[in-house]
Image 1 (cartoon, rainbow, N blue to C red):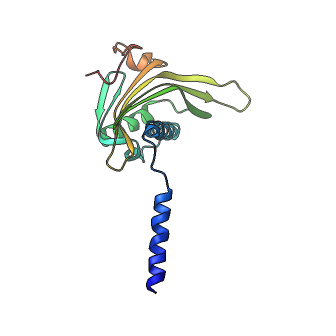
Image 2 (image 1 turned 60 degrees about the horizontal axis):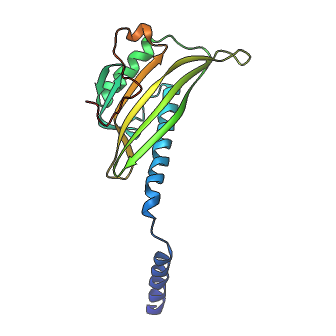
Image 3 (image 1 turned 30 degrees about the vertical axis):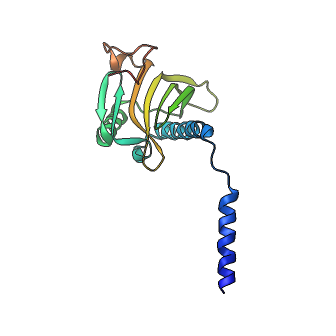
Length: 182
């Protein structure tokens, strides 16, 4: 019995020793992939107008700014999303939000993400799709205690299809930097 236990412990020890330690140089790449996957999931929620999984993307006190108006925390962001759902025209057809030129920069336990988004609406299978929205997004992210990334500040700037809703609002320029913005 004792020799079987010693043999089992030796097998566990050899298995643990045979796995290489993760290369520190790979961690920023792994972090970028995790953030890219998170952003993809977030935009899939936009397509379905879901507000159910906010804790998968945001910290409880996230600052969400859209075209100059700020909201803080899950409840405020969900209130904004509900308002948009009731005031926006209902779209007929299939809607997809495309992410373009996603740039993620990781610096230890913080990261930034920048992207362009374009909403595409296909009202029928045989008709031409049309662009519905277009803009930019800037995100500041922090690694949480569990190792997962969450957005702590999100800034959305509409560049097309928002004139009636946001007339007179000063929008950040193309040189906006979320790390230095107030």
